Length: 456
Image 1 (tube, rainbow, N blue to C red):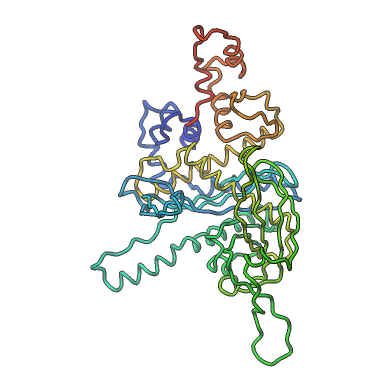
Image 2: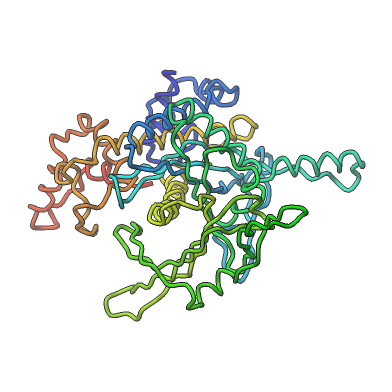
């Protein structure tokens, strides 16, 4: 436990590459035996799921009765270079250009986060990671493989399907939340189009409502009216226009709904169609369709108007309030922020390990301590005056209500841990000294400034 705690502080304060040796160096262990740190992960001496249960419990305690419990689910790829690292393969690059399909060598992970709003009502939220699961694909047999090998490969491919694994992790999260005392809370799952499919919708656990994005040409049907004829009961009624046709039609009026996105409150125009069923993927769920009109914006005050793409959502709760539905989906962006922070600021995937346990445990450990960092910052700084913290660089926008970024939270942690060693009596001391220096000839860069403002 003590070794794990030391590594956690080293991972959060590491100034170089976030390898295991880099983490040991940041925690002052560079002159001690390093093998125990590697065995901690390679021999499964820690339970990553138990670490995430602490995050789940803290999020539930922070939520009030009026706030909904929203989960965010998506997959990500950690780039690797070693061909012998467990679970690596060639995968599509999601950041590749639209005109060319690129491939990268890496590992695939599935993450679940819980949304932690800053206050009740319309507000920004943080995505708190509560699960980080390694999802490798089945290894394809060679040309000389037997019929039995090919059969096993096909069966393993079905079991290791990303959507199937997503449902299993979702069931585990639902059970864990019940154990934490949230069995009476409905769990709202916000996902993109890759998880809005039959594997997820037809295997959705109890007390879980999915809010997902669908294609603009999806075929939806009305719920059939009750008939007094003899024969099999109808499941699907007449087909309705596609979501794109509904958006262009004047038969359904636009409604204005407010939601928090991109740092402020916006007014969205939406169309709602209820009592629907999706024959190809939705099973017997009664759905509501939400069509969101493209939001217009300007890059600068003098530039021309630009428009974002329209969005088409379905929800398995036919009676869910549209404001809660929209806000839950808008919060889905926070899991993309989680991926960016885990990879760029905390170095998830940088560890030079290749066996099965270490390849899965170290990224999961990084995601767990990242969630602890966000929860601690939420508790500590949500009502703190920004002027009492480390002054922001001059190029930062002066927004009083803007939340702390993950980089700022890490810098605050470093300053608190190292302030005595750096001789920082106050956070504004070196800033005031630099501003009072009129001549650049007499300027000497402060070590405390370089350390407290360093970004990985």
